[in-house]
Length: 214
Image (cartoon, rainbow, N blue to C red; front, side):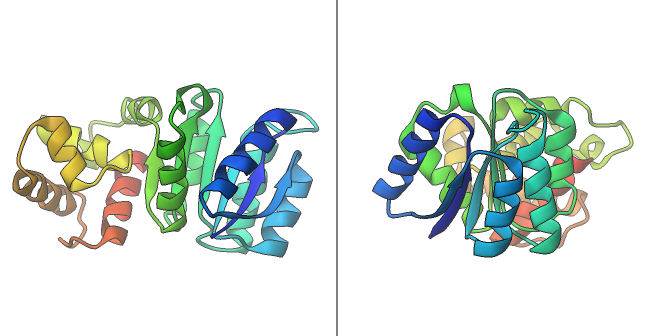
């Protein structure tokens, strides 16, 4: 699985490179600025991009802007964002086109190497990997006339865990319910978000995107 990585701090960049290589990822490119990131994404078309939001030269949003432009040129390019902060506007912009795997993790909360690697794989396969704090911030902005208003409190709990990238089994364990109950809630969520009922992973991603974009 080929990865393009963008991180301006050399020590962290090299650490991420070593970690991913130890888990059988191929590093197609590891860059430290926005223009180099965009070129690497277009030239290499990796299986997944792991991108810091704030990169040189201005340390504002170069990383995310490069990723968004690459997704416009390579539709569906999977992108996992790493950030120090919850950048709500950027997170919503990343989610807006509704195609390809997406993830948004806060750097300070990525303590477990296995969880990070799992998130990279999940995004590369077209799934989602959202930090719980990011999900909470986005959900808090939902409107009363949005699809969110149709969900019961339990369905919202299930949806938030789905947005984090949890499987039905993991959701059942977290909520202390049966997996069958989670499947039923998931079907109800699909219906209320006007998505055809299905166990297909892509349908789950569409549901998450509809939920977070509401």
